[in-house]
Length: 174
Length: 255
Picture (tube, helix red, strand yellow):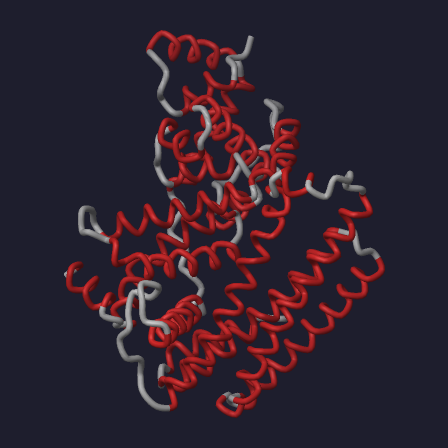
């Protein structure tokens, strides 16, 4: 099935590519928009990732599942995006350092609503958001997160913790 | 004494050794503050695990399809390794129409990508590039540079908008009158916002909120025009369900 789909796409069948898009777009868009921290950037990344997939499909050898290949491509693209604006955002991470603390926040008595959490994740500062998304959402362990982001394992742990604290604050102050 | 953040983080992640874990548990039994923190962190982790995948916006596929058809057109014109394919696109009017759409989509995509990476490129510019000027960069230079980049971005957006407007206006008779009226109303609202933001930028060129507001205005307008073109495209293809989905989103914009 995959082989046939890839062959059709390589032969220029746009409908076959649409099938691939429909199968994987939600997962890729979810990753991209959460890593980027905005639906708008996520949409642009989605476009770029699938365009890149279209161009690179010729290099897909079938060593892994097509979904895995696409996910890896998407992850690398998102990481490139994140790195490209990382320097600009260093200042914000410093701000976060000052903001996060062990101080108890206002109590939240109701369960966390999904939409509130999505919005709060978008508001996480650069640096800790990527570590948080990769660890707590995408399920990578700290060693993998450290490798992907080019940081120390301890930094990954610390960033994830900061993100959780920040989310606690953002969600608790409702 | 409270456990440090790494220990508490490892505790909620269940990655502490048994000795450390029982030490934390002893502390938690006596410390309501840390107990509350651990409970809250667990809530956050639990809620995060339950997050569902997000659906990509409806307009994303039509945009991508147009960009791909543009790639195909390019590959047709310039056979070689650049394109994956050189297969025939659909013939006749749709092919010409798709080319128009693809060109507009490509322009918009390039503009978006260019602008999105613009600030980082600015920051990441190697020191050698700036030192060749052999003069210190003053705040005035920086402000002029930002202003010039903003003008460039503005010009890119305006080009993209013009391209989309050509398509949207020439094909607007494809839309039902109510949708066309809603579109015009929303465009007027966005144009007003752009005009106000532009005035704010002219008055205070270094104001980041004013710059962002102007860029947001352009992006919103492009998004609305893209949706319009996607809607027209879906109607041409006879995809009523797809057209209805886009039209419903179109009516919510600009309000």
